[in-house]
Image 1 (tube, rainbow, N blue to C red):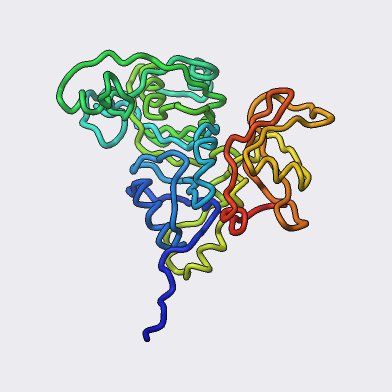
Image 2: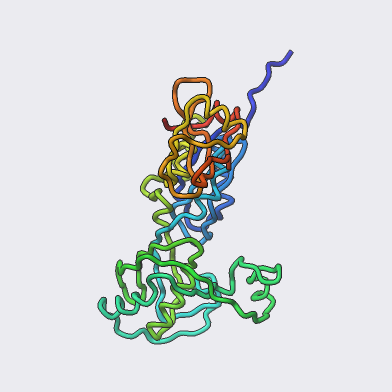
Length: 317
């Protein structure tokens, strides 16, 4: 009788920080890393455009339960703006709409312009985007030659710093909140400078508490076997490190994992909302159990690890 072949796919749990190369879609990058890990289940914490490179946190197994939380995280980018040229898509992929002369730009003059984009601002998304209007993505209208009114959205930009100017290429470091379109920011900065601009290149340098300097490359992962690739996994709970931590004893852990809400005595001094739970299963070592909602009086289960996930997930004590 033939020997049983080992399963190709494995129960893998954790997060890989990838330095995605330019020209590769986020989905393609995810599938390449999934194959390297031989992971059964995979997802990401939000896409990065094919023309962009840099940090892309990828989730496997139990970590996919918490990907949405990290989707809300603040981001940081290095953006290169091509001044004097506007395009249909606000980036280098689009057709050129207009060319203008670039004025003499000083650092002080630029900083004065950039100040107008810092804080809570209203930003009109690019017409070539996946945002939907009447059930259709905006890019579908644009490709059909139809004009639609794009409503500005509230976004938050924490900082924009000058990083260099070579000819008509302006490099900026941007820190921003969720939903910010760097393409739209490039377009609007060009308008404010009076010469127009589009986004020529983009690199994501940080996402939440993760930095691109922690990331590995596709080339490096391809050189490893599954075990070696899995050594790059970060613990599942790295996605929720910004949430307040609540530690449960064995009895409380069992109740929570059975889906029961509970009061805590004494009541902890915690902000209302989601918290990360650490507790015990059948060992003396505390582990990450999942997240719960704290309403000021009781904890209610929100997203918890399954028994199988608790046995195999990469955890921090």
